[in-house]
Length: 246
Image (cartoon, rainbow, N blue to C red; front, side, top):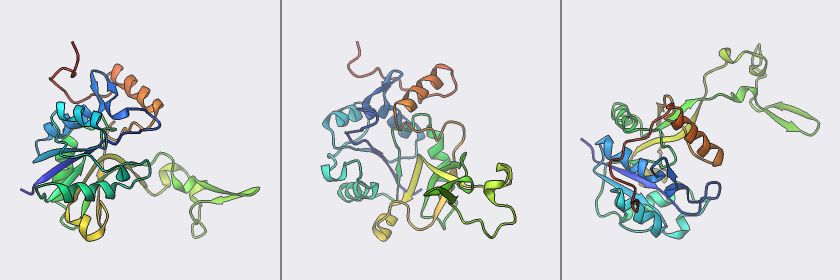
C-alpha cells in the first residue's frame, strides 16, 4: 500500500473570517475537525499541519497533528499559491511519502469516508496524477455573458450551435463541473516533475451532500451553524474536550 501524508494548511491572516482556522464551530476549533477527519480515515501515515502561526500550531498539536516547523511567511500571504508551501513542506519533511492529501479545515462536513473513497478511486485510476473534488455547476457558463459597453455577448462561443445554450433549458446543456476544496490527493512525484500540485491528468471525485461545503466568509459560517442546528450536516466526532475548557 502506498504511503500517504495528510497536509492541513492553516495560515494566519484570514481576511473574510478573522481567525477562521481556530474559531470554534460547535464545540471545537475549525481545524480540529480536519485533524479528526484525517485521523479517522485511517489511511495516513502522518498528519502534518502547515501554518505560519505559533497559536495555530499549538492548537493543531493539542488535537494530534504534527507541526515540525512553521511555514515561511513568504509562503503564507493571501496570494501565495499552494504549490509554494507544499513544495517547501515536502522538501523539509524527514520522511518521503508516495502520495499527499490536502485536508482543508474550511470543509468541516467532509468526513473521513471521502478520503477513503478518494484514495481508492485514485489508486484505481493509474493514468491519473491526482484526484480532485468537483460538483455539478448550478450557474452554467453557457448562460453567462460578457458586458461590452452598451451590449453583451455570451462568455462561451455558441455560434456553431443550432440552439444557443443561453436560449435552451438547463437540462439540455452539457454537464459542467466546478472544483471545490473538499478533497485533493496526488502522487508526490508530480510536485517535482510538473511544479504543480495536481500534475497533468486529474481524476474527478464527485462530492455528495454537504461534502463540498466550504467556509469562505461570514455568511458561510452562519450557514454552517444553521445546517448543524437543523441536523442537515454533521461534524466528525471528537472525544477530547476543547483545550482550555473547564
